[in-house]
Length: 85
Image (cartoon, rainbow, N blue to C red; front, side):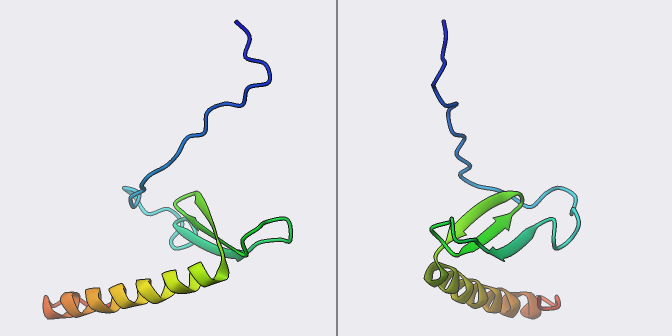
C-alpha cells in the first residue's frame, strides 16, 4: 500500500515541563527573536525546543501577564523566606 503524496501526521504538543536537568541556562530553555518577512507573525518564542509564532500584540500581552504572575510568585516566595526571581 503506497502513501505517496500524503504528508505525515502533525504531532501536536499540548504541554511541556522544565527538563529534569537544566540545559545551557537560559538559552537552552527560552529564546526570543524577530521573524523575517516570510512569516505572518513577527515574534518567535522558543520554549524547550518548541517554537511559537506570535503577533507583537499577543507577545506584549504575554509579557504583561507573565510579569504580573512573577510578581505574585515573588510575594509568596519572599513570605516563605526564599529570594525573589
